[in-house]
Length: 126
Image 1 (tube, rainbow, N blue to C red):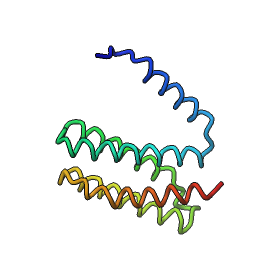
Image 2: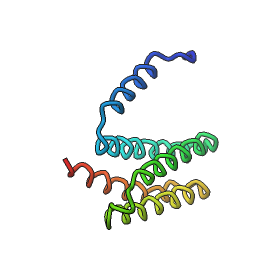
Image 3: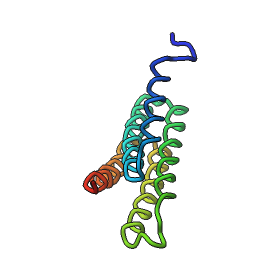
């Protein structure tokens, strides 16, 4: 059993902190999208195992990431792209809640599709 200080997790966190510190805004969005996709997968695993407490924490992490992505949008100056992303993030939030309430992995699929498509769009920017 690992104690509270896990050197591997400390290393991962240090590496992540360094990546975040060096990231430009576009890289930050890509990192958030990648993290969101990973956390959605974890949420699905918790649903499958019927680990409701872990599922709730994981869904909450997903919602926080989605909210963070949405809060980065410049709706006044971002034009149609910002408005569309705002709507997509709103859809994803609502869909994550539905998936959680129904404990349905299938309800995660549309969110994975949307976020994967958004991630592909961000990858094409640079």
